[in-house]
Length: 477
Ligand SMILES: Nc1ncnc2c1ncn2[C@@H]1O[C@H](COP(=O)(O)OP(=O)(O)OP(=O)(O)O)[C@@H](O)[C@H]1O
Ligand SMILES: [Mg+2]
Image 1: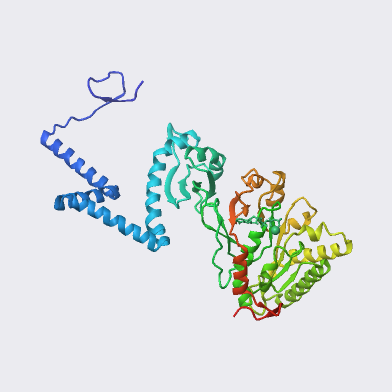
Image 2: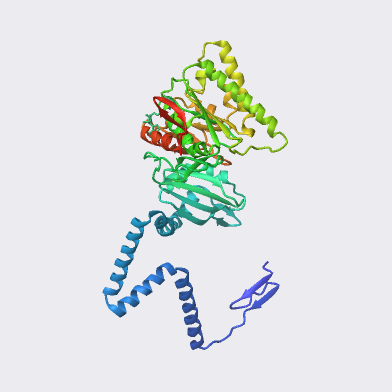
């Protein structure tokens, strides 16, 4: 039995309480005026809300009224000329402040139109209390190659819910890949949808910083078009890739990023090239030591590094926990082209043991005192296994087998998208890296240093020069 009954006509006899809405009679003019005011208010609100459409329309209409067709057409031509001048005069600021904001606004409208259907088909809407609750698209930032969508999740959702359907979202929005990253606020998630591929073209060398920041060395381009800044401070770097995968370009990009430090005396490069010096010899003026022939010398070099490390540890003990490079205490960077040549292929057992012992100490104790190792490796299956885990930063270039990916980047990384075995041979230098704090790996392509670039680099930043066919100190001014 209904307890309360709203009566619009006759009274319902069997309800406990009957409520009748009072009937107020209004004159027609009052109702019409009220509707008119409401309509006007709505028009003002809409005009303000969509100012980017209404403002220009009003302006163009005013110009048309005052000057005829010449007014609006003249304004549009003038603006186009101004935009073209800005674009060719200073492209960076044009893109940053003109083009990308406009593109972002357009893309936001484009995503909004597809949002509800995309969320529903990806099963990201949640039914609650008879309503469908949809994640909210808060912001779209577009940089040409990538659209970064900031989304507020429905209560109870987690970023993994979006990561699980990332492939579906990729196809729904017609993108190439979709990366899901938790945002800085726990209720937000960012979806990075990539359209073009900024890694398809060869990456030109980055400008050499005059004082390198060892925590952020510009070495490669990320797939959203931004610069990958590699952290060397407190780390060691292992670069793994099949032959011809482009390990050289990662090594040179890193050396180039450190070259300013070499000139300033903050960084000393000690280079071991067991493959006979073919790869690294062009940079000799930059290197404090360079060994490419004798494995005995390489072992001596590493052991000397250990000696230096132990003396420095004793000096710094109790004073600091993380070394910062200075001219008195420079950072030592050991660059080893082909690690397996020293740890696996070498036949002299005694020599191999010496090298392994020294390398083990450098890798375990070097990070804190500014002694770093950057090593390249062709085949991650070789028995460099114990060393592999001592490299906190690992870069996976093209590999021959899918099973090698997890060996290089860590367990489960291939499932999370590091498809190193599918990198085409036509894109040398392309690799997967795991960025700080991100659950999914990211693609990056190292800048490409040609022989001419390396010769220029060595001339400008090297501290050796050739006198009578011999290297002498005093290269860079
Ligand atoms: N980042 C890059 N961009 C464009 N081309 C590149 C890049 N890196 C390498 N290449 C090209 O790929 C070729 C092979 O690269 P590289 O010698 O660096 O390979 P690698 O991995 O060191 O091979 P190996 O194991 O035989 O030493 C180079 O000759 C160069 O032309
Ligand atoms: Mg090489």
